[in-house]
Image (cartoon, rainbow, N blue to C red; front, top):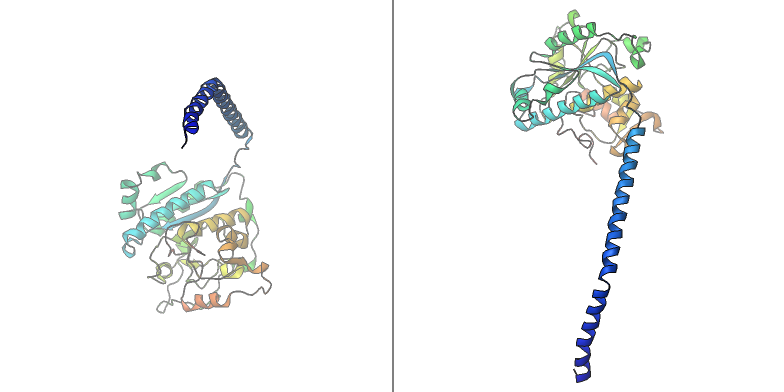
Length: 339
């Protein structure tokens, strides 16, 4: 480096320092203006949010329908600790779905004892004590059905039955005939239906009967069993040995599935609540099983034919979608039909 360059460097630094000092006030002014601008934008955003909240319409009022759903949690001995944790999550989700539904059911939990009750008490802070519109019975699902029946009798709608439940039934709707081979036949003679519990229907995909519609003043039982398909036919046999009607959701009548996946307890209940709202099984299934997950309505399918493989699996005792006795993992949106 020559001497002229060496002499120029200190002069350059001094000049830049002087320019920096001269611009200090301008920089302070610009920072102050930016702060004021940010504050004004925040205030404008807050005012808009407050206005939106004031203008946001109130949620539509919900209706309590004359229909009960029981989650049968009396399967503790068949599940691992992890599966019991999953069931507790599904019970919580079921309560939330029913609480937010436009048309709510009387929700009950049977078999409320043992480790599932301990989990809610010791881990979940007894949150169920603050739940509204749900009953807990430590007895089995028939003892719970007795409680549910009394509640239905005492709380009939003041304005009468409304919505899909009020629509007239056809002979096909009320017919109670087998449309499939019984995959788990009981020893002969098979127990007769119990007339004292003629209003109880245990939902299980092993049933040879198809559920055509939901009926008022009826109690539907969903098996709270998370066992990853180890105990096939357990819920079906449990119901038939007590003389209780069984039925399966009509999914193969309405949907073509690309894969077999099971439904968690809360998914089954979500489907029932959706039917209570719209009265259409196809729409109810799509609300829970989106097309992107592999399901499409048969009425939207050009061939319009039921899934023969899924139908056959019902007869053979294999489990297509859905299972109403739950055999799934944590109740997430991807739980039943992963990509």
